[in-house]
Image (spheres, rainbow, N blue to C red):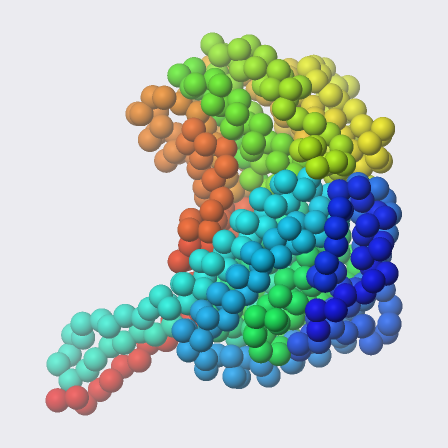
Length: 504
């Protein structure tokens, strides 16, 4: 089953200098019920390398009829999978994890090819994504119920947790490995079956993950990957939300799309877990260690060329250290960030033309309204059509688009503030609340600010906070539910109350 298409391998080798070798994990068919298949219509769409603009391979453009069949097969598989023991599920997940580790370099190269992520960063994502399978392989045995003291002598009260059924997992392009494993690991550990719809930009990573899960012994129909182009995505998403055979949806993506899916799920009262858009504040107080704050800002802002939902979007710097921080940040950006396609580069392309147009328009708007460009500020077309220079802006005002929207690009925007109350108000003055970061050495201030920021996750003197052991998620319009940690399984289980009576 793991024999790969030689033409695809050759295409990858030709399409990216970052690909120095290839293996057996590149597939150009969807994965349904344990087999790689075409769409019934035989229609396809192209997966493109954003670094070069070249086609890697076509994959099936599946439609509603294809997906409806897949959901039915997943529902049939659930009848058996739900009755496996936690130990049995954990063993399969552990085998999957071991295979993911064994093939980590190949997985990273697939990510780099289709997502444009620098290779070293792709390796980091693979390690991060693998950690969720490692975690949930163990958590499967800790889906515990409760025994509750009864108020009546003749009764006993027990609560158990059971898998909800077939779940649709709709995942984004910016973390094509980790966003699948973070969802599927929890769902499979709970005893659910999955229909994964990866982003149309990055389906190859999802197919490689499915192939390794199959090799690990996951039964047919338990994990399925459907592929479709952007034109079919709304109808496919609607079906996943509204099908009477699906029990829940886990989605990572924009708030706008999340609201649409939320409405569609309401018709069937589905269980939902949504991780949506962010607009993360990154605050540097006067007491901060500037060197550490700059280091954290570089890591938080420019990872994946700024295309992460927890990326520092609004950098607030207190007045007494503003010039020092901005100067140090400019120096660090100039020194540490290298744009390009080779493995020693750490700034890759944006994912597609739409994202490039958005980033360019945000910078152009800011400059036209008086923002000052300290570094970058334009496309880096000598590297390719989707590369944009790491950019540092100051003198940004509230009427500029970059002050209102999530940037999702390598653009650092710095604001000056005077007081703690002022910056808390500014940080919270948005409709979303996913992550927030701040640097301070004042312990009283640390507690105050951490509690007052209206976000689901806070990094205190730290710019990288994601880990499998912690609960990932936001507040306000940044989503519902949590992923990772022991809370991640809650999204895929129902609590059943069992009352034993007449025991006297």
